[in-house]
Picture (cartoon, one colour):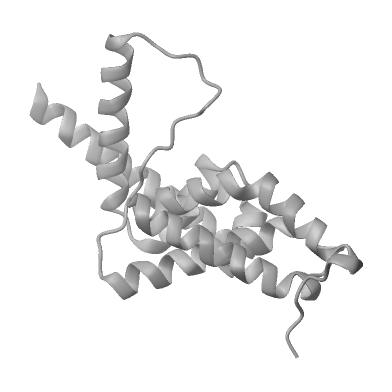
Length: 177
């Protein structure tokens, strides 16, 4: 039997609260993993459909955020495999950040493009570990739980990803010089 949130049990209110708190974060992670705004929207919608469907099954003592990240990563993997697209990183602008001038806009756009291209060169697991750890700021333990890996594996994936990004940006900058 599938558990669906019921308004009288408070689950619908809980769902709405979680969705309002996490909607941007889920979309940002999906966009960084998929590098396609439409795919990221589809992924976020699927994540929240799954949340709605399984809210009653979640363990309140463990919190919902690790589950939400895990589902987001898995949905993004499914979409990337299903559509056979190159997966990368896209930067979602911070809506509360001050608006820089045209020079800074151009520099930030160039930085985002370098990062996006660099991350598209990483393997799926390295990219997911790096985005969750370095971009989303989760602990290594949390990332390991989300990805179903050991902490040592996550550390290794992040180290490898950082080295590959450093090499990629170094090569790119040398070519431009």
